Image (tube, rainbow, N blue to C red; front, side, top):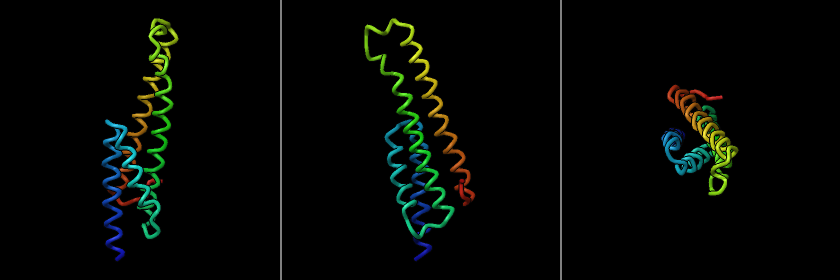
Length: 125
């Protein structure tokens, strides 16, 4: 029974890491990654390193969503046509692009660190 749970948790975490990688290209898959990792994080019989991996994915996805939402706020002035010629709108756009790159690089780094530790069957934290 315990071996079956371990294999199920490993499948869920592997799928979660796959969707976390796909989130680098589409933000929709980050929600799937969060849900799969949360299943493992809430499991009472999960091993310690597997539980740490799940919490790592959950924390990384939530932080990425907050960073992406904050970066998206800087693009709001672009929706107003009459403001497009103003310098502060271009500055907001540049800041938004920089913050979007920071959010993307954060998710890439979190994925690389987490997946490398997952392959070694070690805790991330």
